[in-house]
Image (tube, rainbow over all chains, first blue to last red; front, side, top):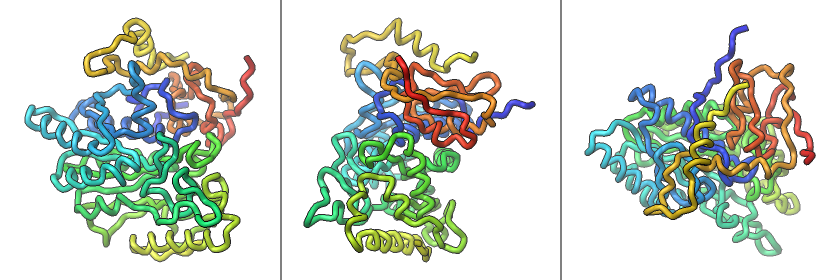
Length: 315
Length: 105
């Protein structure tokens, strides 16, 4: 019997021994994104190592670079919360001047991208730097102890949005940074999820190969922050797609009238009810005791799909 | 049995890594976190049944450590020095070739 080949490269840029929690969803993103990036660099420039990483403060920075250790096997720089995109732009400009071939990868969490680093990100996209910015979205500031970010979804418990007698938890809808990035009319913007690793892999490769900036928003469940058991990380991410909570799409050149969707049901009817996604997570536990809360969340999800140009039905 | 892709890093880190402060706090040795044997965090241990494996590579793809690498025939090999026992591989395995058993010390 012929030996089957793995669909992803066996080169590793993310070494074990890092301090991420068991079952960390974002660690999966780091590993797959660097693998995909190196494969794209090999196909484009003939050198799999032709990239450098600028990494904003966040979970994955904290767990991977505990002095004197580093989990990275690629040139990597830690930058402050707000300027991952700015530093990546600088590296890219220097590489261009020095005549280096390659591309820059920038990582930021949802706090470092959606809240603190949004201005630097916007500047980077507008100046058309040859950088791929990956936002790993775990929907709160997890490394400082689960504070809300603007990417936290409606109804979620965090330490700064506690549910109680007068509060429902997070009371504002989620911010979609992918759509803000698309408004810059950059060559490539996409969302991905660890639920579909090969789709994630393909999108990172595509983003790495375009000339100009690209932005990816990737869903990465967080074990302590979402109050889920460690083995359910990928299962929760899968349910987010199957219930319509997380859209998978690609926007090229800011063309929001021709969004390509992945894993979207043909008739716009999602088969699984959103409750299946919510009940796995401790951060949404209180929603089941409040009449109308889940209905409100459903309305917001429908609104999000309407912005993307789709009418959906949620069971 | 195949060798871990991090064997070179482990040897280098064991030989060269010091606690001494470097200029700019730069970590000079790539992948030096391999010195931390995170396998001690584990409560449940994945046990692999080769007969049931269909080589779909899902466990290999999903492992966040990565504590799973591939042998010559592309079957997964579990690196118990680093496996934190999260159980994603066992949960996602389509043929239940991986089962989580309680670690006995």
